[in-house]
Image (cartoon, rainbow, N blue to C red; front, side, top):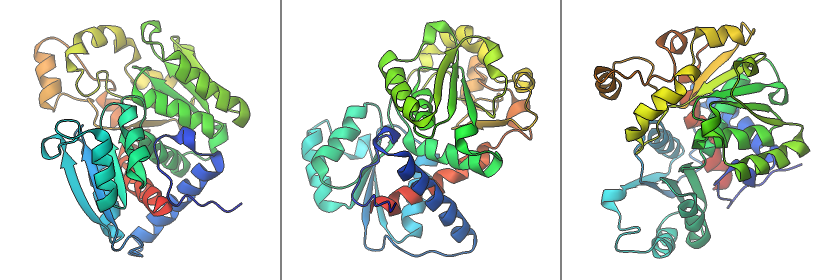
Length: 328
């Protein structure tokens, strides 16, 4: 069946069918091959894209900018300091203005309602670059990376998310696994249980696709995993929670013992990045001086043959380009 996503916003994978997600992944694989061959179609020539960033980023900003520029689009970057959105101008008014100037809007920030209202009032495609409860462009890149390195169809892949299982990446993975019929396990402490409604929504979809959404605090859930995934223990703006989170999440730090517990010699390690895997950042070094090890993964795992985090980071660019081309 033909897939046509032109004019659609990309707010969450829950808005898309498995066939539509499959189309985006296939397109991303094709675009990656073409880029390596030096083939650019400039399909977005004369298109204007605005990037709204309330949260800073390396990969999301660079991936969007390069994807736009390589296909001929013009990019405007606006952060909180260079926009009146929400300060002297309402979100609705900002959306209506930007929709007159631009062919598409990317938003990276906090509240999911912001990206939803941008889509409601702008009249142009809006893309979610991250909110407090979702990160759909990241999951597309993760799925693409798994397809490159795991010799199984996605509906036979088991993903175990280790650590802070009630953050946006854990929820985004629930949505992705539910849609693609995958086995997802949220592996973390009982004090950080995922939102019940989000789990219920994901499980409802999984029932239709043959997927499975589970939550466990016991390490035996690692057995048979194809992917171990983790994220930092305190999200952007929550750094004051590190002392509590270190105490709570240290047993869920991804290390080589966890890798061995999967009993899968080909298990992959993925991470959305940035990662605290050593003490070579100012943040990790500062907390270490205070007696806290904030690493969510050991350096041994991060640099091991199991780790495909830099392929994963590159694939942000290819999957975002696929979303842009498909929706514009």
